Image (cartoon, rainbow, N blue to C red; front, side, top):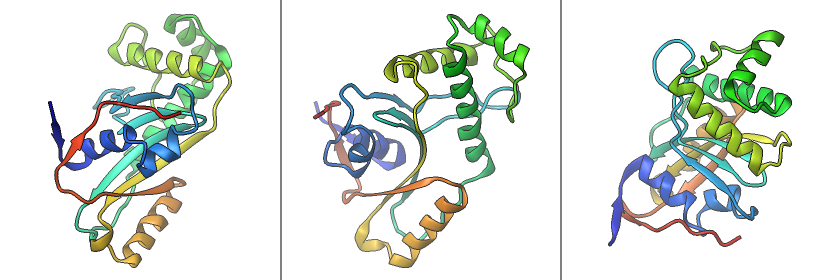
Length: 203
């Protein structure tokens, strides 16, 4: 079976699972058993929800990924407040989880509320889908990093075609990433449609 992909979501999955890609080399090539959450959702709407990453990749460092697709190389990039907030809120959860090392979300909830939750979003209520999703991701990351708080990289990945993108546009993308305190990674691609390969790891 051959699976064909098109657009930002498929490009993200392709790059994470292709050892020759710049994204793979920057995130998981140096890890023995990398962990990848593809498009993990932390709810939409009001309250404690804070949206969806394009990917969370745990290698030697933790990469929180926002992806942008610029097929014609002409559009500017701006990271919106909602995207910046998502990275900040998740990092708040991450720091608290690694500090407290809870055995359950109920324990985490009580400990965080006792010391005071300081974030741009309310704390996820125990028993909710959001809390269950967060607990699974945080517990997996804690095991991967063996309980030690990792270096967190807020990563902006831009998928672009080199022959259609002027250098001045790449400079604008870099400036946008710098303004938001994100690390920019340029991921070139060539075909409009491309095949998705089974996940592999060469580490």
